[in-house]
Image (tube, rainbow, N blue to C red):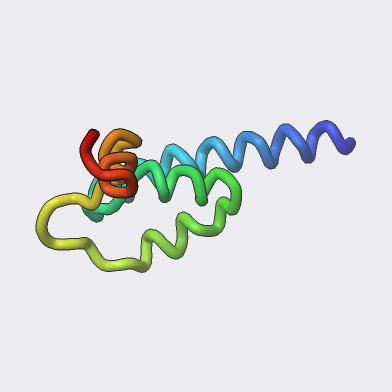
Length: 75
């Protein structure tokens, strides 16, 4: 019985993550952020659904090189 709940939760988490990726793309949001949080807490998909679409370019995470340059300066 416990194994069925674990499998059900896993399937729900994966499905929520996929749905969040699609919704984040449509709403012009950072899809990796929303995929991760929706995988951990599947009801976050509902929150994403209620958020408005962002106008302008999609926000993106800086690369590790960009973060390193910002913190340490050019070498």
